[in-house]
Length: 145
Ligand SMILES: [Zn+2]
Image 1 (spheres, rainbow, N blue to C red):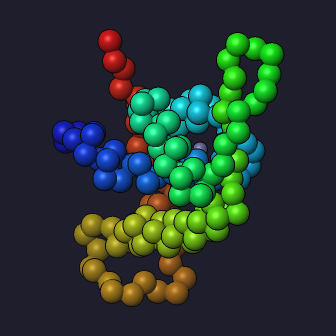
Image 2: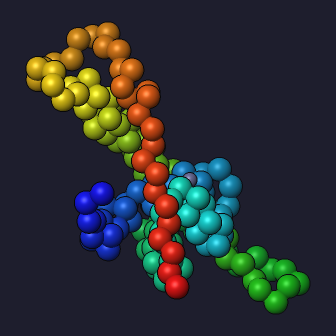
């Protein structure tokens, strides 16, 4: 594997992907930071609380999420994030964007696999066995000492 500048990749691209995840999950149920951390790690992302909480705060400031602190008896009061209607509208746009991005970056790339002549337009019914067989890249979270 080539050396990746993980910080650069995170700052330039992955932060945006994480926001898509967060909006998606907040649409399903109210979320708390700790849950988001473990969910993103389950997806193989190495994200720290120091990155996540400011990100959630920015999303709240953008009006995509609103938060409330649950009143409980425990010593630790949890902040729950809810999707707002503006966040739902953003999520709808992102869903279309992700579909379009996947179509080009994954499906068309598979159709134009190496060693085949480059076609500017794929046939209407193009089969993509390569795309289906492609195993997901295994991303293991980095471990820190
Ligand atoms: Zn997820």
